[in-house]
Image (cartoon, helix red, strand yellow):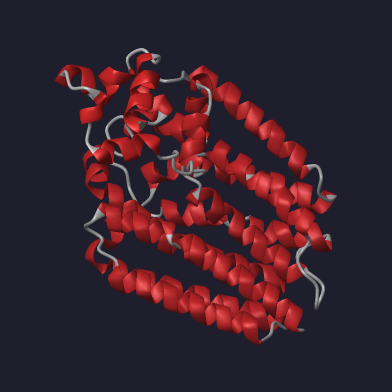
Length: 345
């Protein structure tokens, strides 16, 4: 009975029997295997709502722009956003949760500024990207959009980011605007120095200063500077790991990175950066009277970083990507520790 109903339905849908491979086999549908019938009758599985799926579901003309701002790869946005959350969390009044309005505002700003940074990076690097297998499909390198279109798109992103910045106090507006120089010049550093990851650290962790000033009206440097330094050390860890994915291509095209500078000594350097990060976080905690949950989170972060470094295989790009992406967990753990530590006060 089920087979007869399905056969009648298939006759009403042009080409469906070809799709199923039944017409080509010249078999009656009743002879189809029971497993096939069960699959046809089963409801479709749940749709994925990952960032990559959302980009693929967007209208085709929009997709190159969404990929240009790396909306399909949100790991970088998280790594830009999380230092902002740390600072906002530390600036909350004792016993209180962080300001959710500010967390939301900085979240929007992180998406826009990360997108703008990626757009600038791809505009500078489009010729290099064509020579690297991992980046050859980026919209500018692949010719999906022009340099002029990218420039117009960049203007739109920066305009929206300015609207977000103007929602903050005057001190924070000036502080936030001063980071634009780093955003623009960072992509050039790989041509000049083996330490472009350090410049990325200065850029990506500006939110550790800005989040506090957005809440308090100015920076308390005894808290903000060690927090900022901790973020810079963290960036040196995760972006050195990231850079090991491309080291063979980087040698061929003549760009520099800490991965090429450290080579086989990478794990020793990463261990030093991690230790500096943890010590700076402890100084931050002492200077803003943090409590047990905060230090527990710092210890957990230390264990996570130790596991990353110990198990890292710098010669396997897929392992480097996995370790890089896991740093979102590091940032979230620290944010949770900050919130709980503040509530403990």
